[in-house]
Picture 1 (cartoon, rainbow, N blue to C red):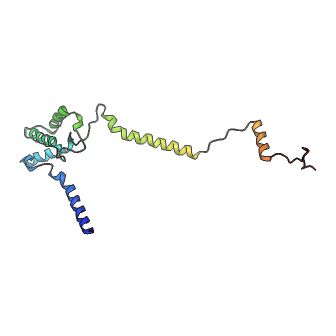
Picture 2: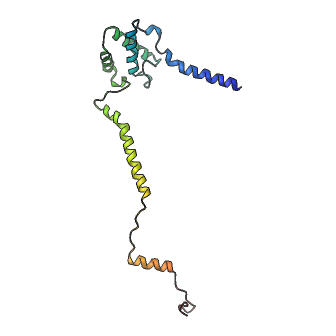
Picture 3: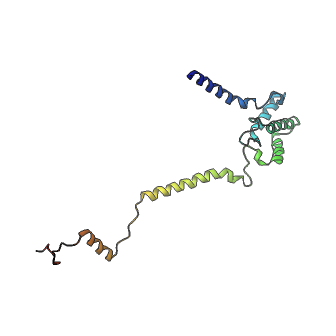
Length: 168
């Protein structure tokens, strides 16, 4: 039974790793190796609009295949890498880029992780300092001191007639 489980786990791991290997089909590839290398590099920089967390080079979605073919057509037509990316950004917006550019409101996306870490760090410093320093007690008024001494010393012992018995 253990051997069967081990084989099943091994087969599952193999199948999980094989999926992205077959994303780019042989019929999509360009005959020129230099152009194919450019196409693969560009495909890794473009987001699959269906999967959204995969590049079109890794995705099996039909739209990713169409985008890979479009990239290869543009490269065959003689477009530069920037022209290919610009064409796809004009059609799909900057979301198609796996790494957004540093202009417009995208700087918020780039800086927000560091801002969150800084705010969290400052919060931790304040919490640590606040926890370490004991709160200073306010001074007691004369009435409070008198009452405190009465409570701590306790009432003086008296006899049944109300006389102080300590001096007897």
